[in-house]
Length: 307
Image (cartoon, rainbow, N blue to C red; front, side, top):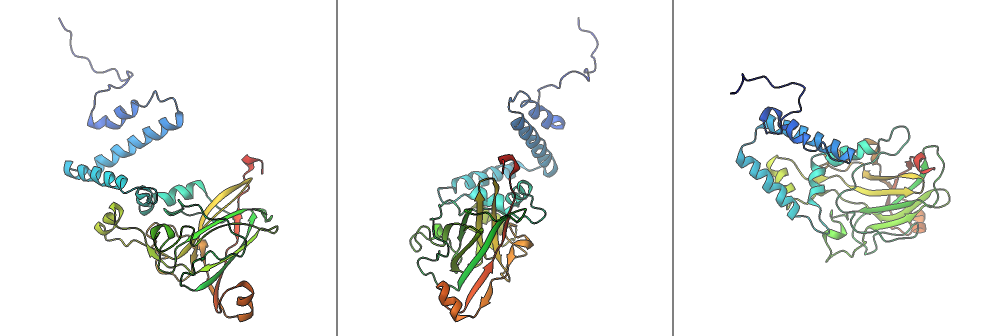
């Protein structure tokens, strides 16, 4: 003979049965035994936010199926030279948010921005002053100079300065392998005893991100353009200092205030000034006139590394 029904004990652990009102709690509890505390924290937070999002927008089953198909197509678009998931993260602003949270600058430190999807090819090592436009791509000749120091103003000798960029038509070497040799418009330089670096190149063009995949479909469906302003990628590293991944944006370029991947920070916009000086041009091996951009870099000394 059964007794009267009783209210559940509020102190008892929650039931594992699925309930809409408690969906995040039920699923989150399944990760309670995860031994890695950081993984447990991430998964339980992800479940909480994901379930809250679903309850907020209440997708229909066809909409949910479309979302799964979109993610499936995104994965299928990835290969050795194309990372569609990074592109998706970029256009949603997640890549920039992660970069900014992990590399907060402050003070004199140079600000970071996204690496972008085209750094999968190693830059060839080159001597200071070398021309990374090895195949004489058409474009405005340009000199880029800079100096790497730490936050105390101490020069960083022997720092690695890795640069890569698009050509004047807006293409990277990996996008046009039949037209541009691998390593074109890329270079890995080492700073001199005073922390200085310089190299020759051409002024890059603004360009569209790849839009022939699911990310392009997303942009078109939402009425967004897919253009990035003109820029040179720069990654600087040295023992005892935190690696910086950033851009040198060309002042006056279109799309500076509407970058498709939200990568522009005002401090990274640099004037590529026109220099009309035949003697100087001849001394550095450029035709006259040429453009000149100076980009000083300030790195954070990593106290954790004993620097």
